[in-house]
Image (cartoon, rainbow, N blue to C red):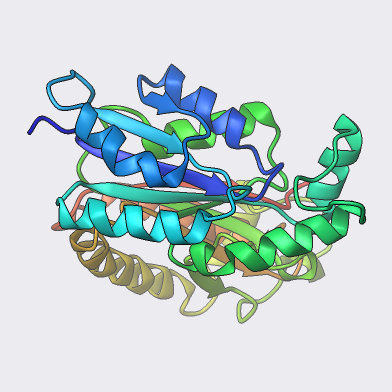
Length: 290
């Protein structure tokens, strides 16, 4: 059989960006099928025998009445056929979803005669188990269309190395923990540059703040040990077919310590060779938010 090298099942909350992600995947050379009934997924894969399709993405919609039963059966059949597949779940905060539906003046597909928030609550409850099983979760709350397209390219670009990609995401605890975090690192044990008048207005992206944070007692050694831990975990992630990991690094405001540490971790992951190739990049969710 000449099945696609990989099948990606794309689902998630309505309004979280499925159409944007589907278009981005098409631009990357993926064969995309939109709004396919989940029960037809194994048949679609079988029909690609002989076709020159290396990667296929299938968008499935929660509005189908038999969504869960059909999707569970389809995923079990793909596993039984030894078809390589991953589940991508798009999520966003309730506030972000409400704003998007209100801006387009469209009702939520599950709200009926109730409010938008009621439809979102019903959908979130129905998708809770599916989200917990997802191989990749992307929180689109703070991403515009172009940023979401870029994130998709980083994760699913054709020709990526057979290793693990690590999204090192800095954030501020006072703004909430990122919903798509796989690993969580708390940097609040490090002395806060906020209390240094000459550094308060700067961010962890500046050399002054970075040097201050990394020169604190034990911090550089801590970063090295954590990088070593992530490299060892990458071996297990790759064995389990998980090739994309979000490491969330937090401090109080997401401006100084978490930013400097995220940059340091990403730099060292990219510069230190391990048994599994690791490609890391730093992102900073809350810089400029204050």
